[in-house]
Each structure stands twice: as structure tokens, then as C-alpha cells.
Length: 159
Image (tube, rainbow, N blue to C red; front, side, top):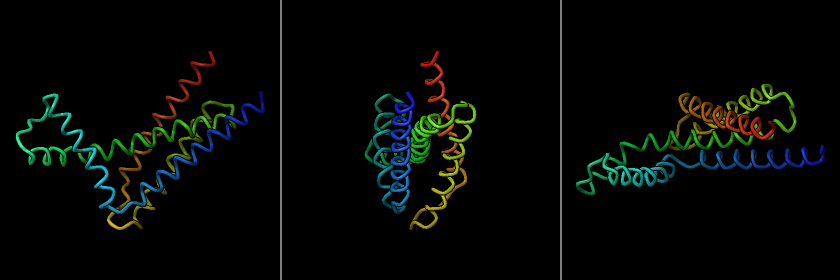
């Protein structure tokens, strides 16, 4: 049983580190590269919102205008989502080493929020990017939700 827990822990820590590396590489993209990637998603979201009737698409210029209006939402949703996933796996990793659930949640949150801070600092050195305190808040909230989901699943499974 102890061997299995250790193996699961190594697997979860491995996924956690890989996610951190992935986030680092996303943050290393220049402002132009990053915006180019997210505007594509914003364009697809604008098309979908036009299809369901929220936006009125009359021309190609309407699509561009609506894509730009949802661009910030897409970028912030990406921050939230990537850190929710990081929070989930960080909690799973920490809980393999820390038996107390509350302590594991606090340690996981500290790891994720600390990483969010270093991620924003990293972005200040990337051309066309800047570190934002608001993004740290979004990242930390995302990781908190991921941690809560992981803890809830763990409690539900072990009942």
C-alpha cells in the first residue's frame, strides 16, 4: 500500500512539474505570439456567440470587433483554467505526502500562488509582456478551485 501511494505521488508530482514547465513556455511567448494564439480562440468564441444569437454578425469586420471584445475574457479564462488544472494535480501530489487534508490544501495553494507570482515576474522579462497582480489573483483563484475539486473527489472516493 505504501509503495502504491509513493508511486502515485511520483506520478502526480511529475504531472505537476510538467504543467509548470508548460505554463513557463506559454509565459515565454512574446506579446505578439501570445496575442496571436489567444485571438484565434477569441475569434472562434465570437463566431459561436454570433451563431447562438448573442452577437449580430453582419460582416467580417463585425467578427473582428466581437473577437477583440472577448479577447480579454479568453486570456483570463486561460489563466484560470491552466491554474485550476495545476491546483488539482498539486493537491493530488501533496496529499500523497501530507495526510492532513487541510494542511495539504494550504500547502498546495501556497505552491500554486507562489508559482503564479514567479510566472508574472518572469513575464516582465519577455518582450511585449508584463506581469500583472490581477493575473496572480486569477491564477490563485483558479488553483483554489482546482484544489477544492481534487479534495472533494478524494473525500467522495474515500467515504
